[in-house]
Image 1 (tube, one colour):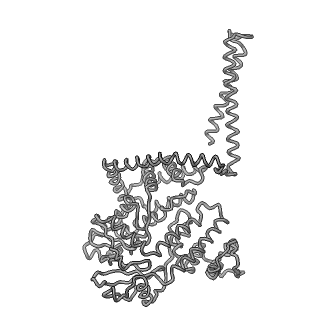
Image 2: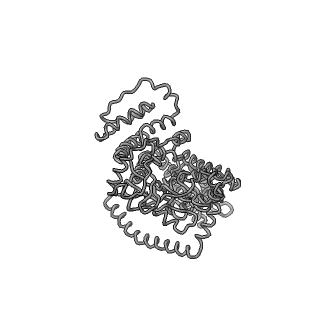
Image 3: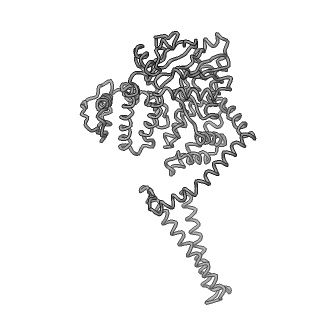
Length: 553
């Protein structure tokens, strides 16, 4: 039973009513929310009954508002945990929200910045340029003459979202308890989502993301990032340089300017690869509305509310998988998955190996430029979902971004090949990585890591010994696997006993033969010959037993 915080009572009730409306009565009954009474209809409406599960989930999230819509949009990238039919429906979720009044925008700006619009802007278009679930955007010109974009947060949206996040987490925890066999814990997904969404509520965070991208691309002639006007930026207000360019989806205008859409597609894809593989920091939502062509050889990114991170461990994992796949090294791939703690069920390795072999052989002989990366990513996610492989959390936003990049590339150039670009990029990446200066830097980092480990190990050993002394170290034993462990120990003990008997027979027989005791056959004591025969027979049986058990394992 969920114990609710009564300040959220009304919202809990709304959520339960919407769940019941769309036929998720079983979930409401399982959750047993304390103190909330609800009516369960005897019959679900015919039109709702005829909807697919995916559509009912989508409509539920849409009706529950911005927080749930955003959760659905995040889940639409999790092809590693959700069925494709549900993913397809969640991909349709839209932030259909009414713009708030211009007067409210002025009040928020004054409250946050301490100045009136008239004090800062020479002109500001009152018509909303874009309206989303968290804020809306205006276009203007500063007193100093620069054209800018101003993003202002919706009134009271933070309180509403924080309330929903609190409820979502309690519901997710309860669902995890009822469906504890799930590979992915819903509460973990909600927790990650909450961190991301709370960051989106602070426009300072988006401003800092923008500054980081400016630093990354400061010497790049092909990528431009808009300037942040920090004097007019706060938690609820963000003022950025306006990009004077052409949306990359506008092929007609590009051709009118004699810009080559094919070249623009390649520049966009290469810029994204640099973000991932060189900097480990990438734009999390690179759809065509967030990328502009500035001139024939330069693009600009906007909207940095959603970003992704790839740490060195995960990056090394990706490259290991890539090279192991190129070499058809299935064991290397499985080893990489185990090292990153992706494989939950180690008894399922044989099935994993078969699935991976099929995947790799399917794509291996295909010309690289013919490989559809989006299809490959979806196949990998399907493989993960089917085989209970828990991929790192950074994979979902990266997969979504890769699919988006390939999608707009094919719009600009029907012959666009992300796989071919990736092959060329990764080759250059590794040629550069193994230059003497870079090797020297890497070696210095490795030596530093080793020195740190040497310093830490004695302290960790003291802690382990101290906990052993206090009996504070506990061993977790899986009862389901205990019988298997017991059988393995029994088999091992039996084989060890037979080995000892064989050894005793061999030693004893050797001693008897040297003494010439008792009856003999061709000069050898009969007892010694019998001992050797028994030892040989038992040895053969033991070898067959070991080989048979190894094959079964």
